[in-house]
Length: 333
Ligand code: NDP
Image 1 (cartoon, rainbow, N blue to C red):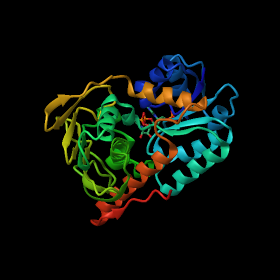
Image 2 (cartoon, rainbow, N blue to C red):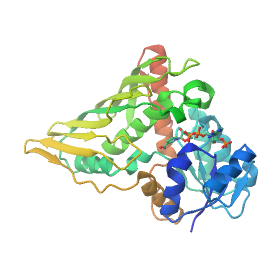
Image 3 (spheres, protein in one colour):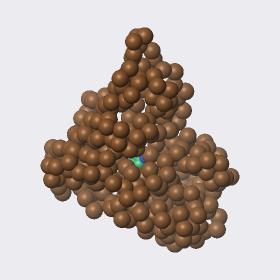
Image 4 (tube, rainbow, N blue to C red):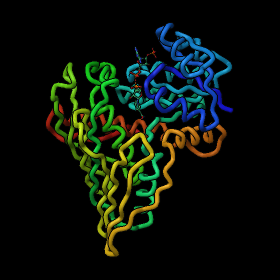
């Protein structure tokens, strides 16, 4: 059984990852919080036997095999480097870092330490996205020409913190949501983005110069163009993911979600068919793959390199929105 240490007493671990880890056969043995009192309370609430306040105490614990890093984004790099040095396998939240150079340092350190390094891009673990990927690979829509990602949501009040006012922590909707869109597009299409253009919006919810919505277009290697709309500000929008090809279209509704929900319809010359989806918890699927990768069986759902790609795209979108000119997407791989 994999023994996990949590780096960060976070909301995402509380809402999804602790349960998913246990459901996938993992044990959570320790949590690190910089605040001793909060860490103790978090450990007690989640039935975690130990809470520590220093990174060193967590990564040097011989009873920990793997760590899950879900602190704010500017902290990921040093935490990954310390865990890799201590020989721990690492599941790190997205965006991997706030700069591409830092993310490269993280990927290189994990490779050198020979530990599994994964990025927690949960959406590629959804039945809906896998069904779309399989349908495209089977030629059901011919050659994909265009995609549309609708991922504008309303940021729940309990998450209205650093995402809205801390640029240095990687706040803003682009590093929060556009990185997920990029990873999902790469997964579903089996293609990589090369260029992005975007306009961002500051409607007042986000402060300190941060954007709270963005719309843009990415061009992929194949020539496909993908439209995306990400936001923290839209209370009543519906999420969606569409791919349109020469011979058909795939329309996913409610599929940009943490929950195992949504529908996917295939439309082609034969009419409309709703694809059968084997809906399962996305985070459980991801952790099960991580456990298998630790045992030498396959790869994690999204690797460190996948995290480099999504970060490179996010940074290019941010730059495009800032400068008003299209920017190349180059993860440096
Ligand atoms: P939180 O704001 O909940 O946690 C981040 C840090 O803030 C924690 O490490 C903790 O510090 C501190 N903190 C948390 N709650 C409190 C509190 N009540 N009072 C004071 N401090 C607190 O972050 P999220 O869970 O929203 O995000 C964490 C990471 O996960 C980010 O990288 C984010 O991008 C990613 N994420 C990924 C998702 C996915 O589906 N893949 C979804 C949501 C987030 P300390 O550790 O010192 O206790």
